[in-house]
Length: 352
Image (cartoon, rainbow, N blue to C red; front, side, top):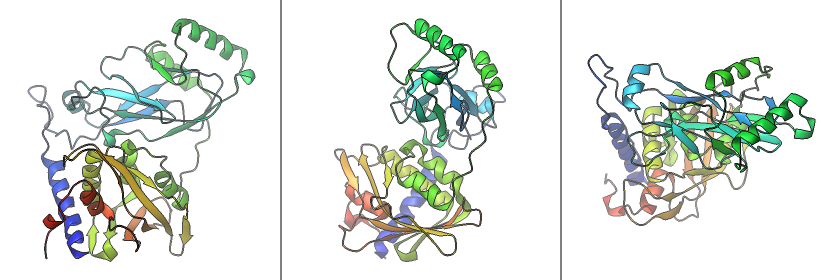
């Protein structure tokens, strides 16, 4: 137990060191920003559809912006970047962010509730569209009304859209055929403003991550948004305590090794307790297909773990997070559990 506690701290330190020393593209020219790739704050923002809105047609243009406080550095460091969007968890559709001439279009979207998300690709990757988790937009929730109830002008727009698309008819298909971004922005500005939904709190907030609604690409953004700057993350009965920076570094290292990391709660036993706490039983799963170890790809699953999250008075920010192994498992718990399942050598665990 103690050796594992030491390794958690060691892995966190290594991850934090790696995060601060990764290679980044050279600045574009004299006077360019010296901000490193890892330090640059950049993320996708969905402008349209609006959160909580109801669309009167079964197609929509996606309005996406890139938020960054350093646009010049972004232009240098993210050259070759793609922006990727997907609807209801389907595969991402991507296009070059600096070459987009038309707003992407989703067509034949069925009536009912939907979730849209966007992310920027890692321009350093040899893969055309390798999502960069820290740039995730978050989920945008909206509704499409039944076409039979749509106004006449909306039906007309649908017909025009389908003629322009020709044979494209797959639900959720993103294409380059559409109206100019300026027109899409104008339409979005004229659209009726929907009341903003109330932010998720305590149990509902935890369930958002632990019922697999948040994809692996959004895990880092969720943690960054909902962990207090001075949060304490505790493993092994408090033998290991990590701060926010160390825990995020460790989580990113695991995501690099397990791109489809999934937080689940099979028992769905979320309970709100005294002192703004929420407790539940979690099982973390994933497939080891990435770095830093290189055995054959393998399905991973930690033992069930008892988790307690302590919230501030708002119920929206976690100030403390404890993870404890539940007796009776195979001995795989926390980050060390994944390390061992990925081929890590138990003999190499740090000694006291």
